[in-house]
Image (cartoon, rainbow, N blue to C red; front, side, top):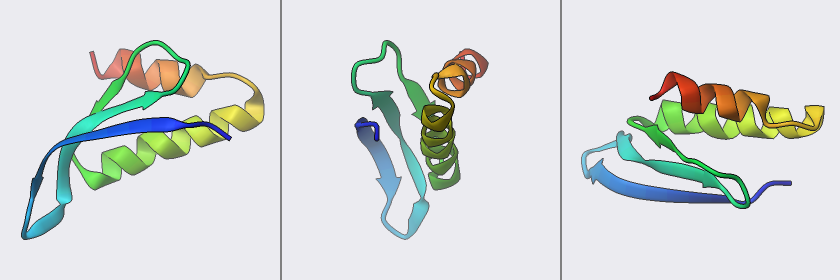
Length: 67
């Protein structure tokens, strides 16, 4: 199991899917920005799947794509 820090910077009251923020995995360098609830879900899902494989390749790849 991984621990995450999720920082929500902005959201719309009438549109809960419009979130803006950052995700960090505790103990790992870097963070990934998200602009929607779907992006947040993809980041969390990718990180969870990588844990089963024993590495963080998907997390690192997402960070590279978002730069």
